[in-house]
Length: 181
Image (cartoon, rainbow, N blue to C red; front, side, top):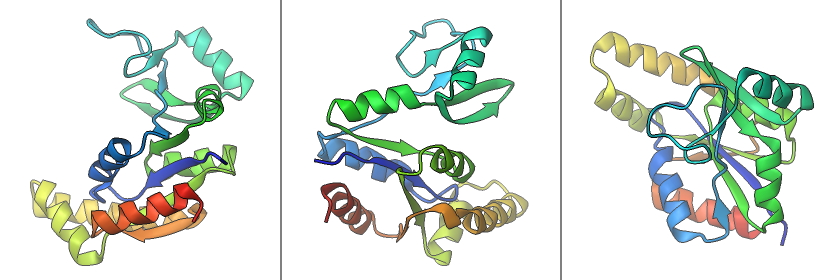
């Protein structure tokens, strides 16, 4: 069976978290890929659990070799997805599921064109409700909605668009996609 790299993306508040959890719970042929980072291990962390950790020389080697499918910087630290780890998961007969921001998903799609990018998008009413539920002020709500509009405009690289208002319908569509139907 042809294994896929499935990338879920969409605006903040799209509801991807529950969909991702449900997919992993119902599909034994699906696996995440542990991200890589150039930050130092914190107390209690173990390499390979949560992240694979690299020093700056190792990170530079990953970048120069073309292994990094996508990267981001947060709080002065680099994070990304390793091509080698994705290929290893596919070789083990698993589909790979990644949940990435729109910008990170676009970069991954440029570097791995065969990845199937799915843009999850709630209806405008549901998006507003979800953003309002996590916003602490009217200004924050407007910023979240403006960001969602910009991310939608950036999402033309996505292969599929799904309305994320109904988790059951999204899960059924993703099952069909993974099963080749």
